[in-house]
Image (cartoon, rainbow, N blue to C red):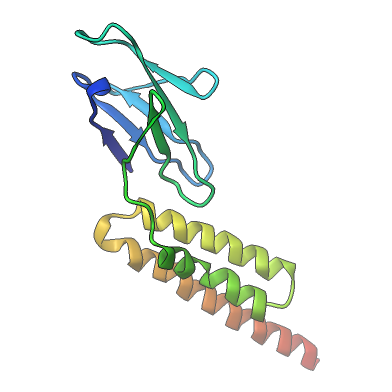
Length: 157
């Protein structure tokens, strides 16, 4: 998902922050061209009447795929933060598999499904975000039930 940045420092050009992927870092595009960072900082050339280039930094939060954008040290909001209940909603797979999965492998599966659920809350189109996230939670319940049935079946032999 792309987030345009519109500030005085970006006036006159199209500056877009592309959300990080599941295994990739966020990207900065200026006028359609991907930019390279030096020491984690991007430099936006000065546009008159300013005579000083702007410094832009993208920071990736621990549990969010939308980066924190700072221009010349000032934070620029590009997307509202996820509410606390959204994080709890996405933790359902982890909690289910930790408490009912019996072991480290189910817990790791739950963590992975929670991570994908968080990604869907940011990446899916507005009207489908909770639908996709719900699908991951339903998948988790199915995995827990299947694992429990397999364990009981194996223990019965």
